[in-house]
Image 1 (cartoon, rainbow, N blue to C red):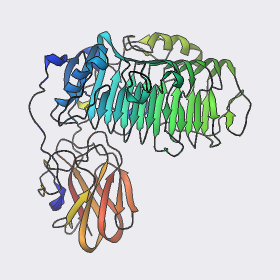
Image 2 (spheres, rainbow, N blue to C red; image 1 turned 60 degrees about the vertical axis):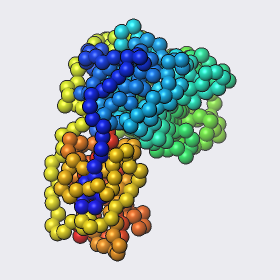
Image 3 (cartoon, rainbow, N blue to C red; image 1 turned 30 degrees about the vertical axis):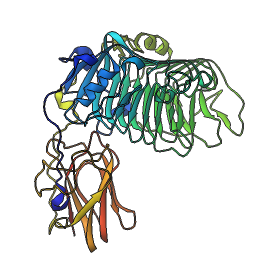
Image 4 (cartoon, rainbow, N blue to C red; image 1 turned 90 degrees about the vertical axis):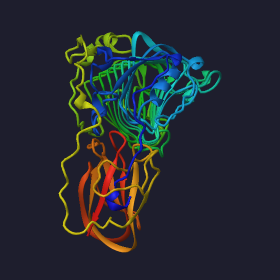
Length: 514
């Protein structure tokens, strides 16, 4: 990574080669696969477009889904997979390849980005088989049913979660899905929609979650607090014991959802979490909002909700229900535009729009259903145009002749194969976050850094920090590539740490100046 950090990725080239033997065929884009755009927090941090602008394939088995992922040119090549039929353990095998990391018995979206999975035709059912998203970004899942995923008994899949996300996942839009179980933990089931270990910028919309002990969580423990910025809207939660969701730390926005028969507790905000709860309809339920089963308080802002036959338990050391007259105890600012349906019509509009097989119908904001918005253009692809050329600091680029190291690299990249001024060579982390450093044999004064992204990859880098690697001190933080200035600091190693991105980031130049 010397000479301004231009690092080469040797990606496989060629067309997508898919075998009909595993049930996948090439197809052109269809309206059902492309209409509608992400909403809520999934629109932030660079946005969520999935496989928009890329190849579209058709799959009828889990193995075919894996084959499609593994046949891409690279792990971030945009891809839409249209799924029809029943996916189960019998037809879901591990497939190997340089652009995937799959496993048998689960749909594995691991260490990848820019993928859409959407049910088409007669519908897509993932039967006793979960969808696992790990170290991944810019993922869209729409119009599918996931049912009866178990963590104990037989067969097991995905730790018992219908859809589970963990380990640096960001920018996920799950829309018009049906997630269901047939009981609680004692029957072998876990959560329907779980997020943990730094999962951020997620939206769950127009979906049905039912017949489960646990609706879902954000944060696996009171120490797992790096998750959040999740939107839940126009969903129906039905016959759920608790966790709709359980929110540990972070921020969630919940609006226009219909909650029916929440048997023990509902929205459980705890450990410093903040929930904004707007125009929802709670019906035939108990303790639908508050902090439960812990003395670590959470917070909420409430407005416009309907509480229809809702009962509330008494307050205690580890039980703080928001009712019977819920009042706000915090404020939550929402960074995106949204339109609220009146709470009174939520049961009706959600019944006509939420879940798989509803034609991707959405609310028009006036309590009526309508067809989804038009097809996103190719320009919405996460492969954005390069950012403007950063202002060039005066003086000598101190990275020339210096050494480099960092976190794990993506397959095919290296710190050594660098060419100064060549933006087609670059370094990428193995996932969507990572760090890279410039180091010197003796103390060197630095006051500015220039980060340039690889050709055709501008705009992928999101949040970052610049660190004095000798002490761990944060010198600067922000988002996007460009020129970064900070107080002149003498050090022997400076680190550029990417903490968020809208795809696999590609750092072509890491210049340093006094």
